[in-house]
Length: 416
Image 1 (cartoon, rainbow, N blue to C red):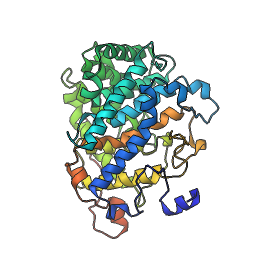
Image 2: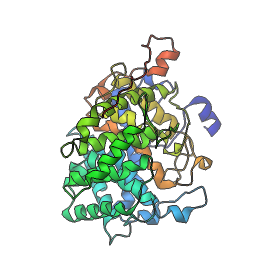
Image 3: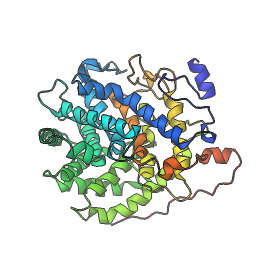
Image 4: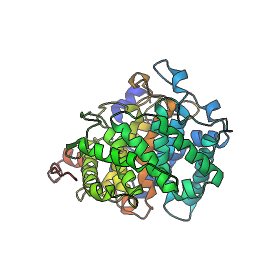
């Protein structure tokens, strides 16, 4: 099947190791098949990164695709991007779930690889020692690593050797020299400080409080924040803003009153934005290619995945329909011809290999934020998200003439 046939049918050949479903997958998929598909996809995407890091040769073997002719510039940052972004999405799966069976063994294997990856990336003596402090970009990915540790405190922190813990703290602390932009970047130092607090290290509560209060002033209504004072039509409410707000508030709840003030309303906003995200998923798993950073692919649905993981989906959005919708998105995206190179690394693009879609800050490592859609793998297979019979998502129901409830905006409310 060539690219044109894929675009016409919505089903691609993909890689041989990826399960494939018929295009009307929601009507025939099962909880077992969906979970197996997600895990196969996770392992396919994670393997090149984690295997190379476990051997301390990521910098040697990972290709660096930077379509703006800035390979040498992005080479300073792309390896930390790959590690941190991958771990932030797989962390809940590593941390929780069933305790026996083949999946448990597989998870234990990847948890061990993830710890080796953190060691390789934070050890100053390692050939894969990563840049946490030079230039602006490391602030972003130090925050994604921090988010991964907050999401998996047992597997990605407590199980680390004390030497690796100290190296990780030092690496995160070194990012403090980077000045964040007056936009979603304020959340990156806040996320890092929240993680340092959770690790028992010295932390700066002011960076957390300032970021939370400032983001609150940028709330635009109906579940959406501005990326800075202005509204941006893109997926940054999901890539960064709302997931980090929730996790920062969780991680620091015992240390400040900020969470008491802001968490209830910010959770309510996140639930509304998750409901909107579910409605954006089309009949075939496609979604609007709007805004920046589309090369993060299905990482655009991190917030929907986060709300599903937290079991906070709105009443009229069932876990089983979200599972079916996200499965359709992953299939639609990842099975596009050209998504992987011959060695299994992700290529730059949104639906296949589309280097012309990349912004100057996009390179190979950036692409691994797609992992953020896998957060519900942190739910056990017995959870309704996985065990429930697959259901049509909102677009499927609406365009097949089924009855659906009317959609209503979130009434504005604002904490102090």
